[in-house]
Image (cartoon, rainbow, N blue to C red; front, side):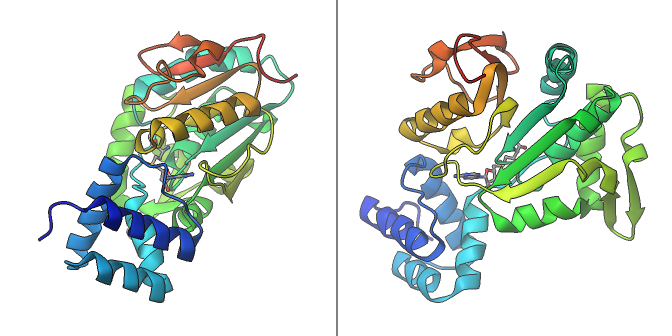
Length: 278
Ligand SMILES: C[S@@+](CC[C@H](N)C(=O)[O-])C[C@H]1O[C@@H](n2cnc3c(N)ncnc32)[C@H](O)[C@@H]1O
């Protein structure tokens, strides 16, 4: 078993992923990348970086599988319930004054976060006035998200989180169960567009009232974090809101001065009303 990857080998892996899948991991934090590469090698029982590079280059399914493993797709509904409480109690009462509301879920993974938002908006009575765009770099997770069908064994944590959040109705009101699957109401996805977007490379594509980007900045180095935060500033309307993950921070970023904290604990910020578009 190998325990570390030399910098030159790390660069070869990053290079072959960029060459074969068009995804540049060059600005991801090296320590996190190394951990994920080693984990994938162990799962695949590959003990030599040259073999990893050659398989990634010659086999598309292998390369897709590799990319899927290293882009950590773990997610839950109502993850960090207090985050959703602040969105419901502090942000929605302000946004609901608008005629139409645009929300971007960046790095949405399999879509549990988007379903949580859809339920929250329905219970606030404003879902019909909201357009949600949800994006990720990984086509496999986007396919799952578009269907809104999940394995039953993922439901226990979702129900626990939802109870802590304190929704108006039981979570089970929003889905049916068939065999081993939980199938969410199609209605929850009717105002949602899922699409591919690479935060490391692609430009922001609209103006939003709320951007939620949780648990992905943590994998980026500081330069890329700054670049992504700058693109969020461009993509937010004046005085609009940004929510990031509980272990993430904007305070050391060059962009911090453009934001005021709504909740430091839950990492929800308002773009300074003098900054942004509109
Ligand atoms: C840990 S999940 C977070 C999911 C959800 N936001 C949450 O907090 O529960 C991280 C997601 O970031 C996505 N991702 C990684 N790099 C990305 C990039 N450069 N652009 C867009 N999404 C990316 C991964 O594919 C994965 O689905």
